[in-house]
Length: 277
Image (cartoon, rainbow, N blue to C red; front, side, top):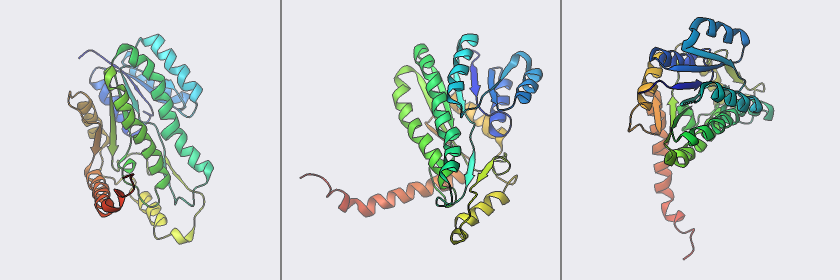
């Protein structure tokens, strides 16, 4: 396999950082995005010609297109896109303001969508490429107190599932990675919370907020191990569309599958009556 150029968003910490390091260790080239100029300078000074750090705010849609055009002009190609950057949000659906919801959807959905759209013409022209969407088990199964985050990841999964079908004829592969809880800053400084708190939700969404904060740095997931699995997965000829990571996703996604199956069976007789005869 020839050396590939990887564009990975949000590599300052957590899973993004682990993926970037695994890619560099494999001898491939990383273009990693940061939100602070000081982080870009530090990264470039450390890694020299093995990687390139760039400043990118994925909520700035115009900046995304400009940066991608420049990268393709400078490097010739982007072989792998990893949409990793995003934010978490805890709070009941009723507690979330529209402004807070927008702050979740801008990076988790719109920024990710725009970056995907920006690289696709290049990948289509070359008839090759890989897109890795870092979703979550919460992109499949919803949890009380996590509804806005769930919605952003459900949206990501929806367009990515359709995208995989659309670009397959062009030799482009899409992978949706669904991690469970990982020891990153997700439940720490990266976690947004609804400013408003309604006491009626204290036993549901409120309890979830407390639990999420209490597990910070105690989660089961190891980002370094996850990164190695992701690299191995996308290099397989028969790689699947979805890749759950951790023991918890297998439980929660399994619960969702059983719930869907139960609803289908319980409503089958009524459902089939809703057609012209």
